[in-house]
Length: 190
Image (cartoon, rainbow, N blue to C red; front, side, top):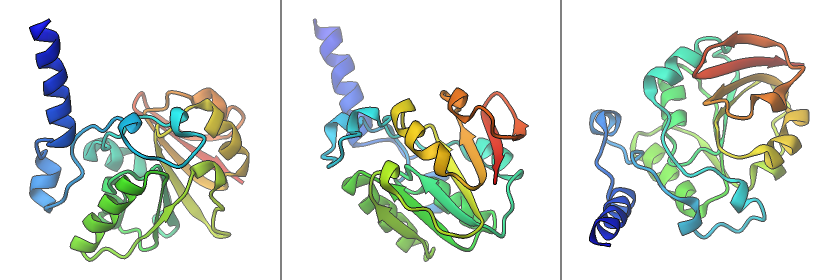
């Protein structure tokens, strides 16, 4: 019983007061940690389809993004605290859009980006309802949600899709693969 309670306290402490990882220490941001979405107030019928927050690994991001056109608009679906947007800015993307359905995570993303003077638009909405810009886009996803949301989004995707931790890659059946790795898949779409 005590060990179960200790594990619970450890998880809560890690979630509420995460240790800053190397990326956050170097850049001076707050993107570390894991956050269970069930603890957040999220005004969306797709809350249960969301995957708990965890930041993308910078090395994996850099490996995946090299297959995408850097002159395009970068759209991060499920941007969380904004780490991928920061990395996209560092990679040379100039127009950045983050889509996040958690008001709390969207606020942290705005703070992180403002603290680094990175111009980015954070759109607070469910990705299933997001209206994509009518321009060349790189759509980035770090496994932010389940199949029921992907089914609504995939038919509307245009441009290059970078899917890290591709748990539901079967939803992208029929899209041409630009590059595939065990950690990510990059698709091209009309």
